[in-house]
Image (tube, rainbow, N blue to C red; front, side, top):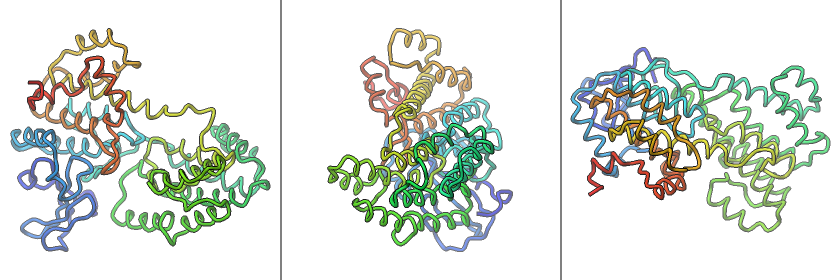
Length: 441
């Protein structure tokens, strides 16, 4: 994409509800329309290149025909607002790019609530996800020291393999002493590593080396950078590349089935065939390493925990770490999403926060959503406008139904037990939507 100083929004009458579009600052090289994964490349009537994308995430070109009645209702609200100014369009685009699995969650939600309340997004805004983020404005990271930490991890691991003692690393990186001690304890003496462990270390370091040079936590890469990263990704994860070659060596030496990422159906089927407990654990570790944090998405909230799990799995033969509570991140995100979605729903429904909190004080949800509810109401405040209500509805929909990919939920709907518990307690998190769609009759 061209320099962002040349990028600008197309006139509002060139987009339809549910979509956004920009001029790239270049002349179009194509006649008609060209699909490019998420976006559609087209041109105006004088040949200026235009990039268009849907602001309901994980809707790929052509899939808007499958939008449900909730999305259609939100789009219908937009169509009645008249011409939207650039600040409102920017907030809407930023809502669309938000993904709950991003490492900046919930800072990124608070930023959006503040923007909706003020009618303007601060720049540079936080990078908040991977669905067409910051398409015409500058962004900043929510993760200071991210790449510095990744480089320290890479240095420690390569130094370990070179038989360097941990004492030198502790002196050099005193703030990483805990990680260094755990790494050396789990892996043990380097000269005691088996051939399989050494191969797994090499496999793991391919991904960590990539993360020392590339990060999705800071900004979304340019087209040229994406092309380069995709080439590296093929080398790390596709047949014929270094990653697949190392996986094959590990499988052969350890007597394991072909290694697939842990989320793949082939992995699950192969795991079921393994009866030996040690081989099952080894296969799990290999599969997690082969996933590369969901294939090179270092913006994932669990990135560093995943890496530490790989190290523990290589050293001890078990992916799970006894000193770490399982599921804490999923629980954290579920509770946050519940509080924000509930707050947005009740704000849209016109229910005073004070009365909402009084009612919640008589219900045991197992956690307290008050902090998120307070943020929703404080940022949005009591002044209601049609534009503000529409933007709040867009954010509600994203947080409720957001996806990680086309089939895997990341929003509150992923946390079915929370929704079921709320239902049993008589709490609706879609009171507003049900009322406007007439679902309460």
